[in-house]
Length: 420
Ligand SMILES: Cc1ncc(COP(=O)(O)O)c(C=O)c1O
Image (cartoon, rainbow, N blue to C red; front, top):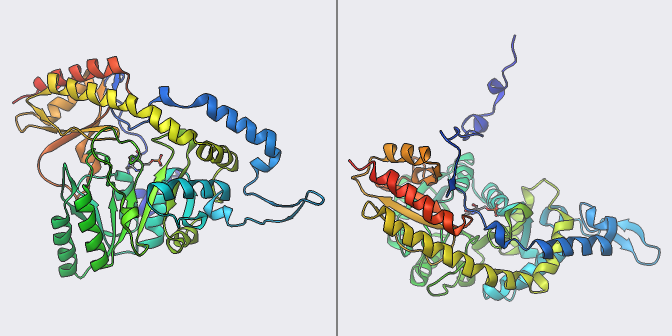
């Protein structure tokens, strides 16, 4: 009998997305697909120097699972003193981040116990969903959102309720209606997952006034809020909007974040910040023995010596220029068949196609011209599809300035050629 690995797949694996998507018909020339930090901004010399410095200083201790308990008298290993690092990660980096995040989020009481380091923020999101959501619980998401969060909710067999959004972010009136629908369905409201600042995929930011209403609804309905803040530091224009974490009065908000968008994704270092009680739940479902000690030690210096703030200040003009070039090119080459709202930050333009455009034809023509982007449906599932309009997400962050202009011109030609 021939062996068929697929017949052994679990239900979860069987229902999962494919590992590989079909290859494009021609090689991709203009990649507007992934939301990546721009490679030219990576602080390579500083990262190299700090990693070397850690090895020079800590030697093999930087390459252990955790910080060991060494007896200073004879330098012998006594005990796994910081056993907590197996589930929460290096304590020094958690302390440095607590101070950095505490300042940004008006949370002077944030401590290392309120932070779990993870392999990118996506692991923090997965852990939080595994730790806090049970089968049948009701969860709320923006009507277009980060697909990995959607998939984690699906794997937990949660009931997903979409909430409408517009250029001012998640609509609290619609949140209230969704909560009422949940009550009518006999479903327990559990968690709101929200990318409140410069969202993926829309680039929209939920206004301060809406955030306050969302907080009061969460308190009234005893909802947890998972605030995904990966783009929150990438403000290119517009007002500074306080985070939901900063508005939290009772520990119901926890915030996922990482170095991926603000330094480099290959560090694979992210975190969840919140109350120690919530972080303890994440620790309870975690069994991967933590994050890299070496990278965590290097990043401790990166944060605490001020490199992180300086780096963020240095990348903002790069993304502002790219956003403006992309927006001008879309207006020039894709109007009037495409409309969009200029985002105040982040990596994306969320383009809405007019009904006059044959979407399938436009996608094929763009792919044949070597232009790749992410179709709007990828950010929705059966439960969340918001309306019949067609969207596409164009990531401008990692594309060279000249390529942005040429690629968007090619996209515009593909769209114009598909007008019905
Ligand atoms: C909204 C959002 N959250 C989280 C992530 C995950 O990033 P990482 O795991 O690298 O922190 C991404 C990456 O694209 C994202 O767009």
